[in-house]
Length: 249
Image (cartoon, rainbow, N blue to C red):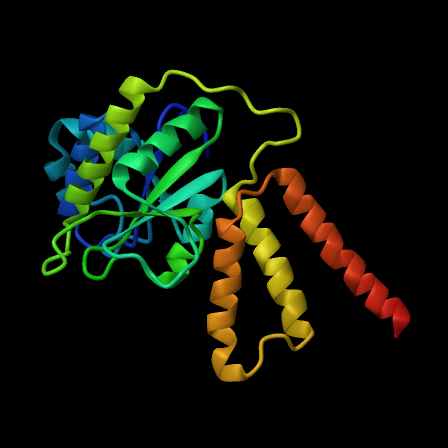
């Protein structure tokens, strides 16, 4: 799934509504050298003739686009994921401007990591559950009286900053053995593991606060700059605690 996207970030359109906006996003991507698109649960189905018509000369981006049933499937093989939002949310996730975010993306990709950028549906943007799966947030300093950006405009803005960043950054030091970053799929499995065990232990109490607690916990895992080795250690810690409790009983 990750083949062919090591040189630039993947563009993930989450539940896009209009085919025209998907096509316009493809044009914006290709303008700035982005060519890997993933489409999560598009409202009007896929393929979409309106997207093809709007894409014009960028049709090859749509031809190569990956259709994903849900967000975990779309994010699974990325090591680092940005979520775009018009405003910072009540989360601990680091917040970057588009310029700073794409500089960071360029550094990570030069070091061999896979980076993805999530863009939300046109009407309301990404939901908190979507953003909780991201490692960082990209927020655009728009007019607070009119913060809404068209989907393709947002892709264009981020793509422009990506192009600027890659014109200036050529290489970074390779990572040391044992420090390979964890993928989004590995982080998601870790979050599921802890959530399941904590649920069994009655941690999520009272009931009316349980969902907010789970969201905060998942957001915490995504915010940590964890390596694959870190993930294995956290899994092992929880398994040992469960074994110790069972033996004590």
